[in-house]
Length: 283
Ligand SMILES: [Zn+2]
Ligand SMILES: [Zn+2]
Image (cartoon, rainbow, N blue to C red):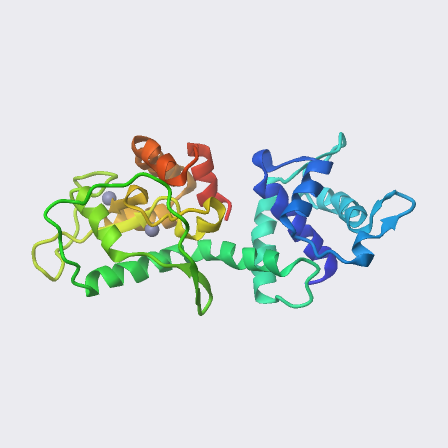
């Protein structure tokens, strides 16, 4: 990936991460600086005399024009830098490219790691499936009633390396308890049915993490909590991962609003429905 693309990637990434998709030029540059996304060295930090600012900031400002010409940033002056929808699209392409070709980066190793973690969003269904296999294979002792829930945030689980990225560990017993607490009914519509599990008694339902585990870094808490796990029939589960945008939004609204307080409690901060939509739409 050439230097220009790397700068585009860091700029688009930073704007996408900021509330409202960007901000004033100086705030976007300060964000990049404080997150440590771009490598610091003597030549990057040297002051360019004609502009009286460090070389890297000057280079980023120069690329702003190219990004606006390409339609990836909103045009116009006033020193406001904002990403566009097509910029978000391009961002996910650039992330994919950077993860495949990690060499010769102008950005830092920490940023490179962040990108690999982000890439896991596309693997969320795969992670769910690993969990479902565990649920089917392990004979988890069933308590009489679901245990009492704690609502305080817990520290994040550590990511474990996997063949194609990183995964966050999940505990099948937590998902099992969440399904039990949901009465083992699809939480989109309790009339939805499915087949019987091998035990011949339990209807097969699937756990889904409302806030994807791959967002653990962003929230910096454990997301594998009962409050965050939804019970879905197979069709609804596939739909929430692969369905049309408007249908997914309707599902998220229905699932999220009744449990919003519980989710905010385990996150240790507020989260809006719009922010939840964005987690599903802007990897
Ligand atoms: Zn899922
Ligand atoms: Zn369903």
